[in-house]
Length: 126
Image (cartoon, rainbow, N blue to C red; front, side):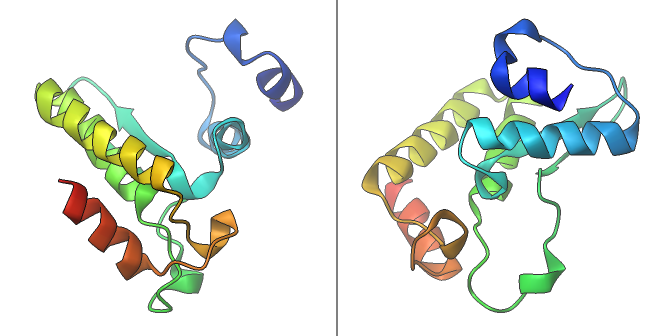
């Protein structure tokens, strides 16, 4: 499945999987767009929706100033869309696109920007 997902992502609209398999597939799928540090996710049911970075909380790098905040912001955009605030979601996604174009990157994406540098850049673009 991972092999096909990477080589032929267009084959899939929705993938239903148990938790462990879904986690593996979502982590692998991030390789298609730049890695774990930039992808947000939502897990939604009929009554509740949880938005989070695909990579989770990354406690191993907490407090070091090297965490990439992009995935958390991307998750927030997904949540905004889910609760009916599509205009705000589009604005956040636009800010993320502007940020990516500027080339400021944290160490997980071969850069030297700190978490604080990225947050400051995002806020300046809002």
